[in-house]
Image (cartoon, rainbow, N blue to C red; front, side):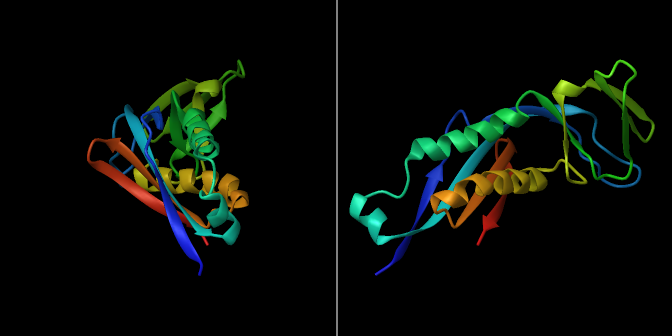
Length: 165
């Protein structure tokens, strides 16, 4: 008889502190601000006879490293939506900054502190989806069927996305 298992990982160090702003419509957008985002992950897998015999599915430490590594990529960076049509940028003359025009705003951020994400808005919905896609790529080889990633921007305010088969 085959069955499946779900692993729940919500460690204190699954966090990233990033700056962003949401874009609401043609006229309104938030001011640039930051969050201490917290991440929770559910990992779904079918349990094989081999897993059953050894008594566990996968070493938690392997999964925790994949999650923590993704948190670290975004930690202490400005997250910007590369696909938003009003977000225009070029590399500064020094070659060290992105000079960014967003409507009537101008920003200049160091390239090493800026991450362009392939989305139109840096919402928790989109962040959870990108996070889930990234870690699922690394976990599917371990036999993971799907992952659910929850990204919380402030206590009690989060979104989750499910990626996998």
